[in-house]
Image (cartoon, rainbow, N blue to C red; front, side):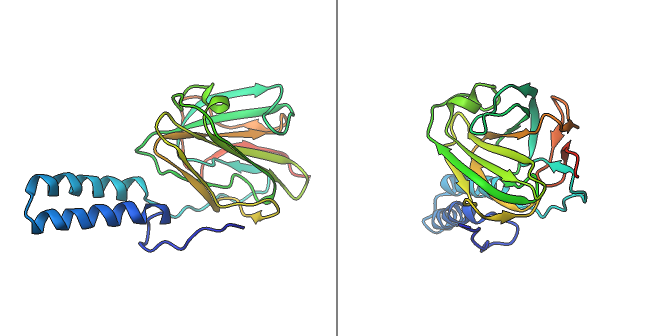
Amino acid sequence: MKGRKQPLIPGLAPEGTFFVAAGAVLFLLCLIIPGWFGALIFCVYTAFAIWFFRDPDRTPPKGNELITSPADGRVVEVELVEKAPYTNEPARKVGIFMSPFNVHVNRSPITGVVEEVHYKQGGFVKADMAEASLINEHNAVVLRRDDGARVMYVQVSGLVARRIVCYLLTGDRVERGARVGMIRFGSRVDVYMSPRTEVLVKVGETVKAGESIVGRLPWP
């Protein structure tokens, strides 16, 4: 596993350390020079960076049959697709849009083994649009439960975001609710589940990564 770096600042995703530290240093420099207008700008910037890269703890629900949301955000798509990307199998798809104000740390929807990881560069389409899943830069991770059922989540960059972070490699074992990566700045995550899955969310609902249940897939 690539693994996740240990956060230097508690409650902050490690990917945000540079942005917060840079903003704080520039803020202090503006106070020393002095430059009150610049200090105000960098104070606001640092506060936004802390807010954007926040990484609160989450407690996943119990139950092997449950599939939890891989992202915080708003459900923008729920549909049955004939052929999911990469698996080429029928699947129930749930699309989750993350605004810049959502927590952007992604979490594993199930406990299982990483079967495949696919990264693809792409274009610039608004992340809340369905076509963003196919056009934009994205990273797909196929997970296999111990009973053989597969669930795939796809991290999709947004109109501006061009940085997808994935901590997983093929063969890694991951627990449901574990941190698996993040996306900067405004994006979406799609989760593809077996057609047998009972989808438990609707378009317009708000979900939390690692805690909100998006589906129930029977366990043998």
